[in-house]
Length: 324
Image (cartoon, rainbow, N blue to C red; front, side):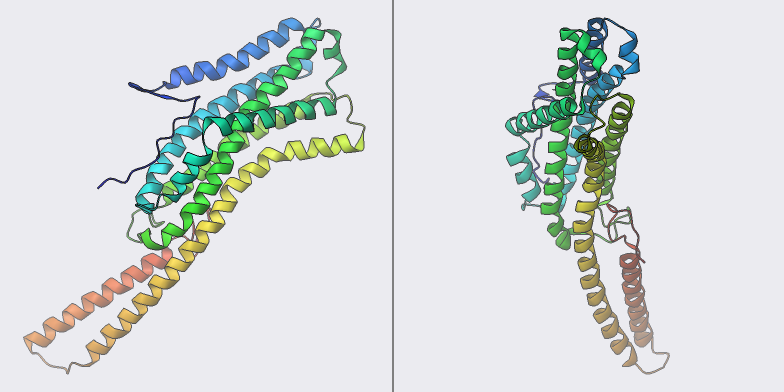
């Protein structure tokens, strides 16, 4: 019987009769928002050189990349939810988290919070004086901060919910890990790969943000508290990227270690019982004794094989460490 899983289709990637919107459309939407800002900012500036000197175009790239990253991460997370459902069975805790928190209301709320925060940070850092030559150019600059903050805010909120869903999901591994799974991780390799992929997307956005923040000649960088804000805002995407791997990784590693310890303990007991049965037989050529010992040898080999698989199974593919 196929496990039920959450149908996750937020407002930006809805489900139609023919499926979700194509990647060509998603790319067009992502590039469209970024290009819209870039064109508005370029033509609003009296001095076009400022557009390049102050890295205005990078802000448009950040907007497009954040939106596209959100589309890609949404597809990957849908597949992760299917895998989680297979592990959880009827105990759909991670899906309940998604159903409760990954709805449009919370997406808009998180987007609005980070949009306001990003615009405020940009204002406190000090928009370069050249942008003040035109009221329209200055307004569009702030609109760019808002657009970038809103798109990134939805992504950050999704990451927070993903982390929570993995933490809720982790305890179910005690009952559903499979050391015989060919992925060498008890069947959770895809989930670990997903987290690393989310972290990579966040890191890419973080690099673009770093390029932009270092490229702009902020007006108030001579102030101590402004430099502190600069460092905090610069570090935020990298902290998020680290958190999405580290926090679920530690939770999953704990559950995998407990599972391995329990199963290895069981196998050691079975091994001891087989050895005891093996010693009860006397040497001889009796066909029945030979057949029985052959069967016991096969059991011992199977038990040892299972123990070897458990020992080689990674504590957590999510945190990228292997423990023999």
